[in-house]
Image 1 (tube, rainbow, N blue to C red):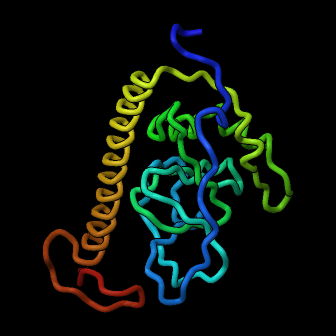
Image 2: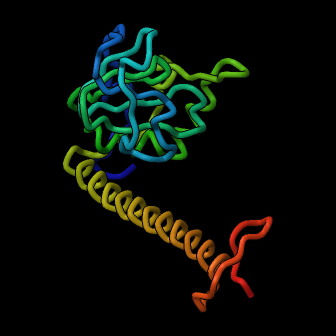
Length: 203
């Protein structure tokens, strides 16, 4: 065991939190469903509004962890950057002072945790895990200063990955647009003619 690191269960360092909430038809609280969480991503990029849903939801606060308990192999967990409401298929988790959420979010995305969560599911068509099962996950917890350093390094890498993915998406869209232009206009800027497959160079 690494010096200063201690064996802990997830339930020792954080708790399931969040109150049940009934959405209002004219409410404007941000709403997070599983469809809004990208697999493997730690930040929220999409959200809806509470006025778009009707069934009971769970309230969450900025800085808390939102974990998708349905099909845990999809690896859906983020840190909220605002207050809002979420699907009841999302567990709201918050540290109790022995750890920090910025560290725990990466633990939750680890292969060991995902494998453990998958082993605790019940249901065939819609396999779900539960907080009662997840809270027993064993792991090694570093001291708080080291947790902060680990979280900083992993966040820096995550941001670099997201920026790279953004550049790849931009380049892909540019390629599609360029292909469309070249296959319909050519490179000589020549006149066009209409055909059964659309406009093409006259030649």
